Length: 304
Image 1 (cartoon, rainbow, N blue to C red):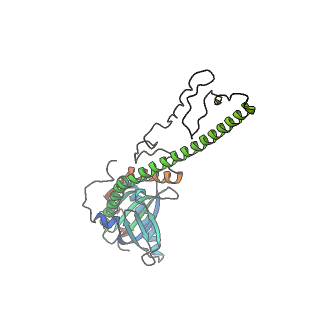
Image 2 (tube, rainbow, N blue to C red; image 1 turned 180 degrees about the vertical axis):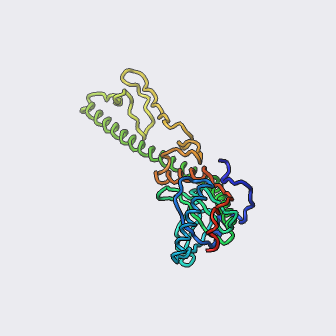
Image 3 (cartoon, rainbow, N blue to C red; image 1 turned 90 degrees about the vertical axis):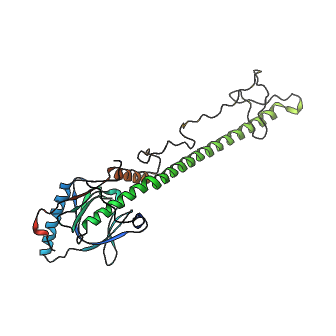
C-alpha cells in the first residue's frame, strides 16, 4: 500500500502537524469497552463488536453501573486512554497496531477502532461514545497515523539506516582488532623462533650465521620494525609477496547491504529491536482504513 491510510472519500485534516507531533489532541468520551475480533479490518467485524458491547452496556446500566468516562490523547505516538481525573493510562494503542477506524454516520457519538494487542497479539475492537464528535476523532486518528507513517519512512528510516551502518562498522572494527591481535602474536612467535635459531646456529662465532630462518611455508618472517627482507630463500628464489587478505563480505564500504525500511535483513539488529522494527513495518504496510459506516442496528442504544 503506497498510502499510509485508505478511505472512501478524501477528508481535510483538522489539525496542524505540529499539534500531533509535538503535543496531542485530547477528547472526552465514554468507554463502552473492548472485545476480541477475528479480523483486523472490516465493517461487519466492527458492526458485530459494537452491537455486542452496546448490549453489554445496557445490561450493566440496568444493574446500576454507569458507562465509565475516559480521556483520549491522540498523537503520532498513539492513542492513549486515560482516567480523566487521575490521568492513569488504561490503554496505550500504538498507531502501527491500529488497522481500522470508523464512526457511525447515524449516531454521531459512536466510533470504534481495531488495535492489535501488544501482549496477546489478538485484535481488539475498542468502542466509544464521544458526544457527537465521532467523525472528528476518527479523522484525527487517521491524520496521526499518516504523520507517524511519514516520520517512520523519512526520519525513522534514516535513523535505522544510520544505526545499521554504525553496527556494521563496529562489527568490522572488532574483527580487525581481533585479527590484528592474532597477527601480532604470530609475529612475536616468529621473532622468538628466529632468535633461538640464530643462537644455536652460531656457537663461538666458528660458523657463519645462516640467512634468516624461514617459516613452514619457506617464507622470510616479517618484522614490523624493518622492511621486508629481500634475502632469497634456501631454494634461491625470492619469497613471494604476502597475499592481501581477501574481503569476504562483498557489500558496500561498511560491509552492509543497501538499506530498505521495508526489507531489513534478519540479524542486522539485536532480536528485540529487530522484532519491533518488523512489527512496525508490518503494521504500517497494512495501513489504516478510515471508514464511515452505519453501526446502529438496534434502537436501544439511544441516550445512556
